Image 1: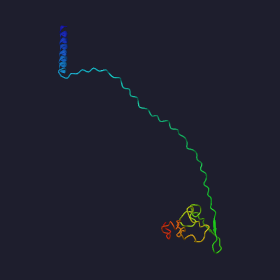
Image 2 (image 1 turned 180 degrees about the vertical axis):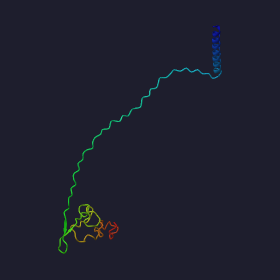
Image 3 (image 1 turned 120 degrees about the horizontal axis):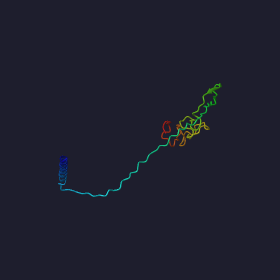
Length: 151
C-alpha cells in the first residue's frame, strides 16, 4: 500500500509543478490588467409585427341581362327626278344633324357660319364677311379666300 500512496504523491506533485510553471509563464508579461465590472441589464427587442391577410371573400359575379338589339329601319327618302318617275334614294345621314355637313363645305353644321337652308343665291359669298371658297372661314380672316383647301 505504500507503493500506491507514493505514486499518488508523485502524481500530485507533478501536477502542482506543471500548474506552477504554467502560472508563472502567464504572469511573466508586463501588461497585466484586471477588470472589475457590473453587468448591465439585458436588452429587450420587441418581435416584428405579424401581417395577417384576411380570408378572401368569393362573391359570384352579378347577373347581367342584356336586352335584345333592336333594329330601327330608317325612313326612305324619295326624290322626284326631272322625268317624273319616282326613284328611291338612299338616306344621307352625313348631312343631317349638328355634326353633319349639309352644304358639303367640310365644316360641320354646328360650326358653319353660312346656313344655306334658307338662302339659295350666292349673294353672301363675296365681301369681307362672305365666304368665297366655302371653307367656313369668312374672307376677312381667310389667308387664301380663293383656295378652298387653305384656311
